[in-house]
Image (cartoon, rainbow, N blue to C red; front, side, top):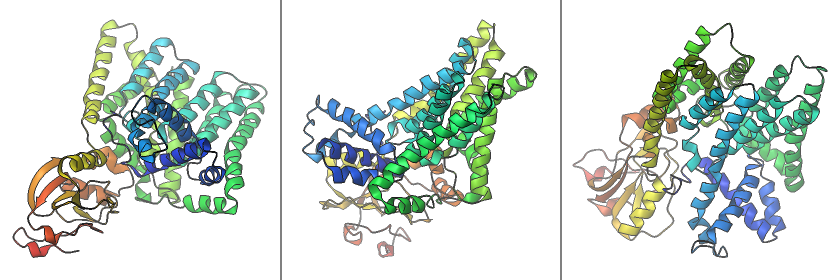
Amino acid sequence: MVAQGGQYFFGDEGRYDRGVQLYVALSQGDFPGTRSVLSMPEHALFPVVGAAVTGVQHLLAQFTPYGDWSRPENIVFTMGLGALVLSLFSTLNLFLIYRLARVAGADEPEAIWVLLLAAASNTLFYPARHLLPYSCALSAALLALVVGLRAYSVSRALLCGILAALSYHLYNGYWYLVPTIALTYVWWWRQQRPRWLAPIGLGAGLGVGLLLPIGLGILCGGRQYLLTMAAFSATVTQGLFAEGWRLPWEFFWHAEGALGITVLTFCVVGLCRFRRTVPDRVRLWLMMLGTGYLLLVLLSSGWERFVVYARTVLPFTPLFCLVGGWAVSVLVANHVRRQVVAGGLLAWLAAWQLQPHFSRVFPREIEIAVMKAYGVPKHSLSVAGSLYLPLGLPVNRPDLVLVNAQLLYPVREYLGVPPGRTLLKFEHPLSYLPFQYESHTPAERALLRAHDISIRLIQISHPAQVPDDLPWAFRYHTADRPSGWRK
């Protein structure tokens, strides 16, 4: 799936390039360049991970014709290798979710059911092809829980706090995981003596993990680092604050579909049937879900500080898997036929909802294919308001226009496409409903669903009426009036 492309579709993927810059700067002994990257506070540790991944990418590139990175274009040509390495965090998360279940007291069958649900989950799967920080940030959070819940000691409390804080610096959108993990650790060891051991060790770890990256950033960027960090914290405003309480459930409804409904059914039946014998670990997962959700609602719908996005609630998925794995385990225990039916049902639902990702095409790959086959066409959008991304190459096919070959955001109004003969047509990735919960408002989602936003290569009827480089989309009023095109 990674080899088929899709990278650089989402805006956050551009932050991976900072890791590439850091690797190049370090490999060339460029201290000012290194300092420049480390002085950026947004998701400050992701460039460090990106630099490590880029190092492996460079090594793998030696087995390709693009191993000479003195030519910058070869870095771009091998970016799929970097995406392949970064995607391994998604696989690591499956192992960590399994280990978390075992550390918390689940037996082997229950942990296997948890692992199966995590492997089947759509929301843990589809971000893996992209150059995004979400999976590696989730790895740090899961590892914090695995370390912290395994045994009661000062060293483990300290490491748990450090890892929880690092998950925030890998992706700032997971800020709520820090207090959630801290409360989880304290509650889990509430009966241990001495009681002050956990809070002190955990607090020290959180302090170290939170402050050291900030200190490094201040050392590299000075006062400007703090100013940029303050400005960045006020930018989580795309979308609507008011829908923070409902967006997670709308997103999961579309993202997990029938599998999510099946798992939720298992959870409800299991909790109702075994309500008197629910183990502490299941209560812990439910408490974490409630705490995380409450924090998001308070700071979105309540205080209107941070808008909730689909990527924000991805850490909820492992918790649903942990509760669902317990529920399936107790409902099918000692019944081989039930186990076979449940396993077969989950595997079939997973295959059904994951397979469309392997045939999904993205604008970057379509644009490259069009240029190879047809030359460089003009570009246009069928919606108004979106940030237009010019290609930067001279047009040599003025009779062709490529429509919607980019992320459409923001979306204000549907304008239509230029008149002419459609040569190629592809479904736009934003037609996939879960993608519409990344910053788009309800009104924008309604507009995207009401109109055809497909990517098209059109042989236009009147080439002179469409400029070579459009600063924004054009409006066409009637099919029989080419003069209806206007800015």
